[in-house]
Image 1: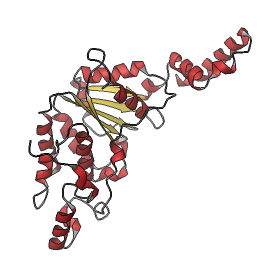
Image 2 (image 1 turned 30 degrees about the vertical axis):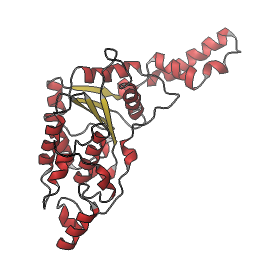
Image 3 (image 1 turned 135 degrees about the vertical axis):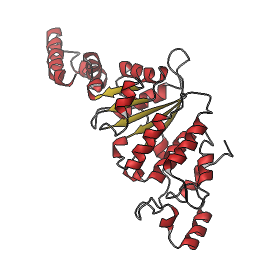
Image 4 (image 1 turned 120 degrees about the vertical axis):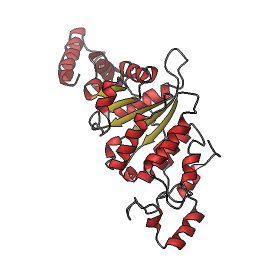
Length: 289
């Protein structure tokens, strides 16, 4: 797999994160313009940006989170059944990120047999990740949080005068991922911000050739332009939609009692008043459950 590579150099040069600051300076002096380092990047994309490591952190679930056991089981199934992709697609505010954070924090702690066991890599995407080189750098850095050195061979490719095509880089990465002995999960949150077709093509290539020990989870406000019909035909995808994320009656009641403390507010009222209040609240919540 090659020597281990640390992504510390990303903090020096995000436009070509596989090079040290010294090599960037030398190439700049030789070529006269940093833009020629990576021809696919625009002038705006090739400005130096610091590497934001909090994009790789799994969010902490809120303490007042209503447990979503039925959805956690769906996410478990996607991993347990060996499917390539789990897609969580729903509008803003539907609870996609918190659901995945709850699941991600729970998976490593589960004993074998109770829930699938896996190493979780997380990447929170933003609009700046529409640069293919930046996207790949963050993706590898996320995986290296759990699997140090997995990007060593991709790093080696970037020692060439011109880095190879994204497809070639993903081929090398996929080959390295096949050597991983344990199940791993890569979560891409807020994928809807990605608009670059080159990135969609690369992720599609990754999905098509995904090693059996790696599972991809994508959270997005809209369906991404990936080969979803083919994955459905092959039964290689688990889908969680807005309708699934809506509270059931039981979850809504749990929210009212545990989060809004409705039960405490009504505890001194007559039983008939409490029953009527809960009936009114259930009716009020009916369109949302």
